[in-house]
Length: 456
Image (cartoon, rainbow, N blue to C red; front, side, top):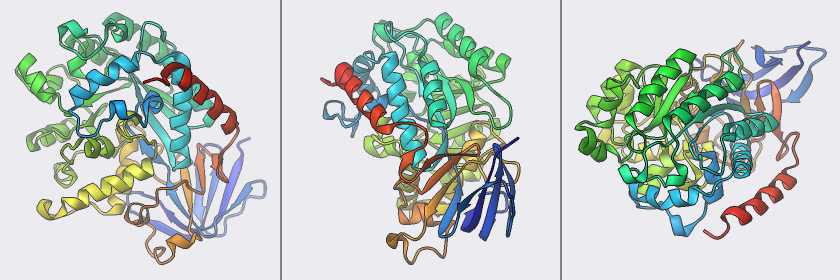
């Protein structure tokens, strides 16, 4: 029998549904992994009751681009990303990345996932491309272990780099895989972990790291495998590599991807600040989504996405933290606030700005669409029970509560939330992750960091 949770008398429920409904003084009944009913005066005698008074409830945030392993290379002046060109930064950071071990992947993933959950993110995609000769191939396996322990909904991007340094990449020899190695391991983890069913807690994405650091054949075979297995594709695009692609191939990266069919409704790219208005049209027409990662754009001094123009063309834009080496945070609420302010900065010359609520939908329902999920992203009956609560009784929110839709990005609600529920289970409450010993994990992870990476 499915367990039930009844949230009573929520001050506001921001649904992010197609009608942009907000319910006031309303209950949510959760049964098993899904929302059973939303309404007033609901009753469920056997349910665990949660008091929703003074709470605003939002759909769980969906993070569509990250690099969890980079939580172990944060706060380092020696590899500071600020105002550094992407390719230049990669040449500095990859020699450090080659130290990454299987245990580092596990503890760094726990660190990032815990941070995400504490700040309202319930579904996360991670782009794990850091495979070395010593790390072995079980890195996604360790991430799946971490996700299961914390209860986050996890989409694992199995990345790779196949082009050696001697042929123009930024990749040390110790981090280069063959295409055959990559494709073989993708098949292994798809067969082990990919669950396409509704309310799935784990899926696999075929995600070669970026076109400038892999052979073309790697991307061609990625497309063939993903389409055969029915999984999604992902890579970095439009983040400083276009001049290199033009030199190598005589064409920009998006055109290169089009020619090998690395576009479509089952594909999304990260960053895209180099995309042109003509390329917005291509993205929209092919149904290819884009993950906007505001932190690296600001830290690197790069162009800020013209989201109004992208929306006008019909592009689907979602939100990502990006790797902690170019963010130092795994807080998607912080990224939401930053993304809104970035758009507001350019609002006059662009003729408008997405509202804070528009940005919330980018971080929720658009993120679900990016990942191919129709079962999450909004608070509706039969949707997955993924949500977070904000306690409105906090003094600092006084005077803002008349507008729950715009509250988060507008007023900078970026701290830990009151509660996070994923797939119908409470995973974070009262300032702590549920079911794990945070202090123990923190001590173990810090000791591992000092051992492996403490002298960078």
